[in-house]
Length: 242
Image 1 (cartoon, one colour):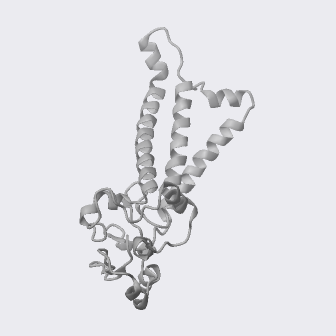
Image 2: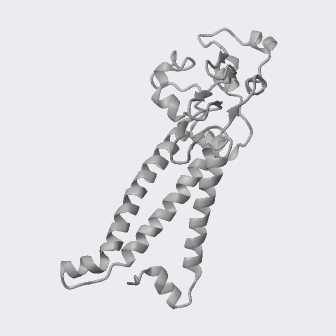
Image 3: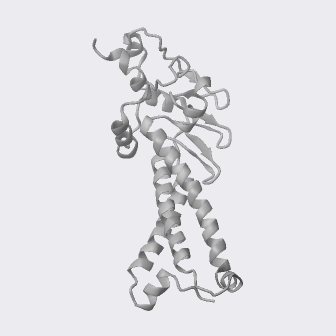
């Protein structure tokens, strides 16, 4: 039985703009999924990568004023490489990841410095696709005089709308939480495991050494593509003139 939803009505009127846009949106969602899944999230492959990311020579370290914050390079106990600040070893991917956020089973990859913005963009496109699909399912419901006949005519659409609604709710929560953390310039790992992270232990409950203000945090996340030297951001208070 054919459903008479908005897209089918547009096709019957030879108005193909909305059907084409919906197909393009679905295609963009699929392409972003594979891009985020296959992209290098920021693996630390050699000690040279850590030194490049650190960007601070021994002479420059001696020039940093002494404060309660200390610069201590960590060597990973699994891959035996020096970890840049905000990096963490992922036991699923078997690598240390720069600015590690979390390992996502949905994309079967880590979310890190190189693919985090694309992951958030994927969630946004996915949410638009799901909401549009939910609207299409809603527009396809048909009137029936009794509940039995209504369920026979609309049972499939009702089940589809329920599943799409559940997925939409999950994506809304994921997207909202990531945008919130991005606005604070913190990661899921840092937010959940703050008490166990060496460079955050000394900070107060409401103190984030990487927070540069909401607008600058969002700008840096979405618009700055270069690798950020987080050690310099971490010690910015020490280098500010009094």
